[in-house]
Amino acid sequence: MRVAVCVSGGGTNLQAIIDAVQNGTIRNTELVRVISNKPGAYALERAAKAGIEGVTVDRKAYADKAAFEDALLAAVDEAKPDLVVLAGFLVVLPAKMVERYRRRIVNIHPSLIPSFCGDGFYGLKVHEAALARGVKVTGATVHFVDEGTDTGPIIAQKAVEIKEGDTPEILQKRVMEEAEWILLPQVIDGIANGKISYGEK
Image (tube, rainbow, N blue to C red; front, top):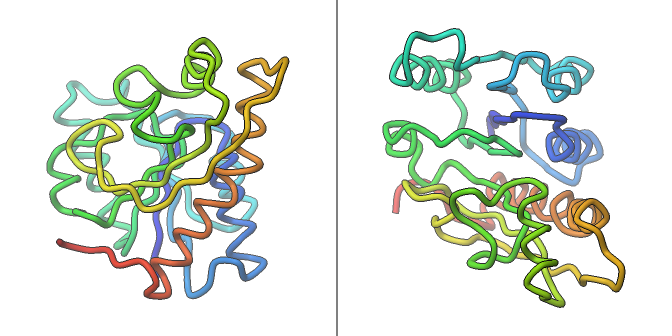
């Protein structure tokens, strides 16, 4: 299975995927391209170290949103992926990309959807909201991407306990280590090996 990964930042989830492919946790999968919307994102260095092609599609390089969206879709299409993984990709996908890759795009979100998700909930903001609300359990969700924000069909979830004295930063790290970095490779492996059905429904 050919996988393209879209990133915006440091690429910790990308690294978890790279490691899982290399150590055999993810089977029958080739990482064919890493696409970043931020020039100089550390995720691109991770890709280069692993011998994966990295490309940047920077919104600032395009005259308008439509031109940027066309370039983003072209960057995905060129990779000919079977699956597109959003690993901390802070861009709302163009509707035509969602349509073309229906049920072939998955996203990882650092909460138990439907809690703390949707517009404005990304990065530390998710964990700040969970702590402010006083929930005792949070976690991560992998879902198929549809036209909404974090609204697509849920594939898998993993719970993480919130502990006394947690800060948003401490909680973010625990959710990554105990949920995101485990769940995302499991889902990719499941799709690659026919345990999770994908494609048009």
